[in-house]
Length: 395
Ligand code: PMP
Image (tube, rainbow, N blue to C red; front, top):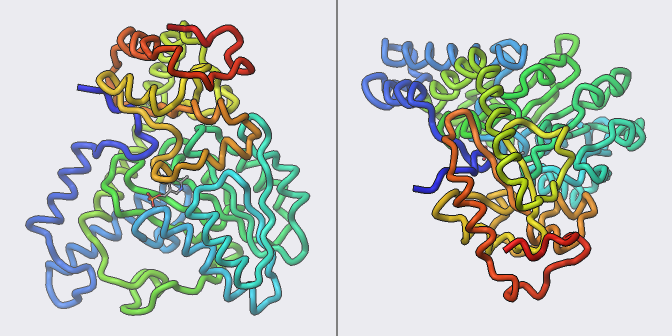
């Protein structure tokens, strides 16, 4: 069976997390909002335990955690939720980057249509955003700065700590989409200057459909968010609806495990990456994103002259890989991330994302190489000598 190398899209659920989820799907099925019996109390206590565990990973307090359905919802709540306050206070400018996930870019587009002004900072060619260019984009009327922690397509780590430091004297709220870094790159997220953090469960071995928004208090005050939905008043009224206790307990367990194990997990991933880079050397890959700035779990590369769709098909018996982010794989257009980095079309058309985790077993790298080398050169009139540098005939 093919080895799964698409953990940036979604990761397997840890067996210990599965057991926790099953407990609250089975015997402990109570509603955390039920006040009159033990079923409700036990469900509520599971939710509060999870809140403490999630908060611990980012150095927050449990009262600062709002459970959501995932990072998409958290991003929407952070961005759209601040709009009312921005409009009331005349702070209607927003700063973000061109390499954000669509769940940040599209709410920003929606705000722009509502009269907000949005500045999107371009990344450097290596896939990272220069903190200085963020500072230069910020104005007196800037309401919010939103920068992702780790890019989901390239794995490039963004300089969140430096951005937080440069913004220390500016009142703008700082939001970080940490879908790819939460529970993995833990220390930057503890920075008290970060006001809002989006978290996704299924990237840290919890189920899909659960996440959180951290709403950190600054000088005792939490960011002035308005809810996107109205109803039962749960989650401080910011995210009403009956709490999905099994999923929340699962995210809590996954956070607890990440807290205890992230260093050894990262070490395992670094080793996997080292082997991968060595094994793929004969194919002379070109890296899309500055390798030294990438997380231990993701690499984005182009084999010169090889189209990504054909590569994915060719290696499919050996490894399950993707071309860019799964979230946009239904769209035919080239990646907005790689295009913002200024890559030429041939390189973007060949871009492959390989992503793994500490649970990933070693694929048959020789089989992988043979599969790529078996792609007939004649079928690729579009191979670009500009990036081929003599490698196009790898077969
Ligand atoms: N932001 C980033 C950077 C992501 O990688 C993802 C998931 N691909 C999301 C947001 C959306 O997360 P979720 O699937 O939890 O909605």
